[in-house]
Amino acid sequence: MAGPLRREQQRAASIVRVLALYRPLLDAYVIEFFTEDLWARLPPSWQAALADVPAPRLAAALLQPAATTVTAVWPLSLLAFKATAQALAFPRHHHRRRHRRRLPCQSAALPPLLRKHVKPKKQHEIRRLGQVVKRLSQAAGCDRVVDVGSGQGHLSRFLAFGLGLPVTAVEGDGRLVEAAERFDRELLRELRKAQARGAQVPLFPRGPRHVAGRLDPRAPWLDELLPPEPGPPAGPPNPLGSRGPERVLLTGLHACGDLSVALLRHFARSPHVAALTSVACCYMKLSTRPASPATSPALGYPLSAWVAGLPGHALSYKAREAACHALEDYAGRLRADSGALRTHCYRAVLETLIRAADPSKKRLAVQTVNKAHALSFPEYAQLGLPRVGLDPAAFQLDSEAVRAMLRQGQRVVAFFSLALLLAPLVETLILLDRLLYLREQGGCRGCRVRAGVLPPPTLPLPAGFQCALIPLFDPRFSPRNLVLVAAKCPLGPVLSALDEDSGDDEDSGDDEDSGDDEDVAPPGGSPPSCPQAEPSTEEQSQG
Image 1 (cartoon, rainbow, N blue to C red):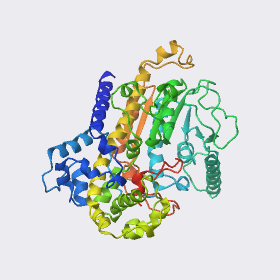
Image 2 (tube, rainbow, N blue to C red; image 1 turned 120 degrees about the horizontal axis):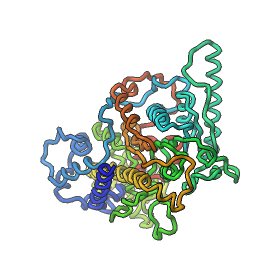
Image 3 (tube, one colour; image 1 turned 120 degrees about the vertical axis):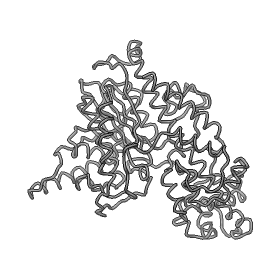
């Protein structure tokens, strides 16, 4: 393990150095393009190279690995910036998986009863993750799967009804638990009707057990969960508690913010948790180092001792928010020269007008203006200014100063694209931090037990933790596609099985498109079980 550990440590250190070098670019808000003169922050040679590059050429030259359509000679420093960012970021496509779909559609690999209420994006995710969970559960000898942050129970339902696994679904929002139980009852009714007609339905008759409660990240071996919100004051029984020798696989599909970190702590500390799969999201909600470390010892980032010891490892809210952007989706907009790109400039001009009228109004949330790209700027401003308490009649919305800023729309897009190129590096650093944490915890667990930091185990202690990061989903419509897999047993057979399956993955072909899903999410949309993040300024710039 020393070889992989050293490589991961070196990669994390290299990313920290690169992010520190480009921090003014990473921490910049594109809505402040004019108010903070962001274009002037770029080296003059970069300004000259990027000022008039059309969006499709920008996508090919900047966001794609190979620049085959660039006709101008770019500065070596800009080429080095791109090459470094792409080399240090984790690959987001499986080296053997062939994706041919252009848009998510109904998955023919899921029985129709398991598709109901499930968006196409989520269908793809639960089927792919379910395969990993089943193999990992078998390899680790697990008796039960515990799905934390289960939301409306889509993953839990597939694991139980579709794969026949014993599943406990834990969700902190009691209303989502009620919805999940209602969906389970609907599925069981439809299953019985189909069986009564003599139809052969490839489903198991046992559903998941739903629990309304929250895990305590500091004490996974307690017998009770924290109470749900809203819910009764007393917590329900903890499926990871200390009763009995049951071995558990812990999973979380897009567990929001610190919840994904809590899963790692439970895996590292609880002798009952034998395996883990974690797909994170909402990095901006991670707790970070406070002014006084003693006030909050359990942080979401940094998690590992190695990353915490790197000078300049801190990540701003803006950097962590940027890591949640859909790079592949944005590259597609550039290639198509989408009219939606002009809303970046619209929002930056609007910010200039707002601050000129009231300097105290900075980075205010302007709710999405529907089809903003189809409007003229005066029409856009007429809708946006009242949302921050300003009267549009007090502004000259078609002045020469406004038109001069609007003519710089291509520069705004180029600047945003540069910042977006750093986003995968931030995500890679956060995930590397988690991988290193597990390696650190697995290497010294016995010492912490003997020192009394952890309780005596009821199950044998492993010599170390096995862990890996896998690009599991198609990143074009599931941007948070890297799954952290960990086990207290060898992972080789599980990872080998994934490699064998990836060449003929049925999700990579043309699935049937039944068109009967009533709630189709756009690429990169938030999962329904995840609380919405604080409105980002970049999202505001899209409308």
